[in-house]
Length: 321
Ligand code: AMP
Ligand code: MG
Image (cartoon, rainbow, N blue to C red; front, side):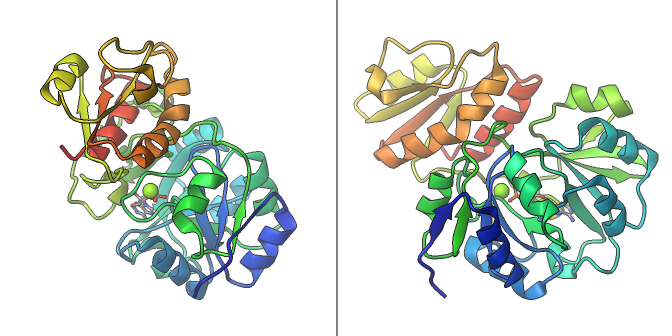
């Protein structure tokens, strides 16, 4: 089915499509999502098709209030409760044992459901007007860069969905941190907008799941978030530019422009002392630079700590050189 995709700010219009089991792209504070009624298998199927996402990759269920979490999960353990209290609404996703009312297609048959309470005024307003939660993966074709503006969604999803709810540029800019539990111990399945140390300050030691083959968290697939242009992630950008001398290079860096390349071929994401700003600008920069048609995109790697660890995680999965 093809659509003439509309972009608008009308929440009621978004609700009308969702009530008819259609997909609406919605803004959140992390990235835009491709949202559908989480209780409708028919609607969820359309999300997998539009995204070209294999059905063994589960979706995150977005709720409008904390109470909804208890309606979707059979059990909320004490550590989960602490995390809910501290970080919700916000860029945190919790994996909790699902109740039967959550269709298996949402969790790809897994026993846990991923739940998130987004902190974006438009998403909150929309969700609070619905009598069902919204299942939503990021609004990009499977494997490609996540969208952080309505225009990014339009560029990738034009004709595939009826409506994009425009809520401006996403503030956090990279995906939520996903946390599950193994024998009551918190496990991070995806690094994200909330850092490891912020989580550990609330629940103590957590394990980082490093099994990239684990279908439990395709956000942890080795290759993901990738532009069409080859991308090289390196600490040594001067060396890399010398290596690709003669090629048409686009550079993504921090703090200041490199003297080795014309400024027009570079995007400075922000100060490396303000990684929130760097994360906010990251995907938009990748969309912009990917559209130019360079031979190669070189990206400077950050020190691997705090938010830098989450940003490096995305860039490592995006790199294909
Ligand atoms: P996306 O929204 O496209 O960034 O992807 C959502 C992420 O949440 C993916 O990495 C999923 O694997 C992960 N996820 C969603 N539901 C579950 C679940 N039930 N169990 C494990 N991971 C999940
Ligand atoms: Mg995604």
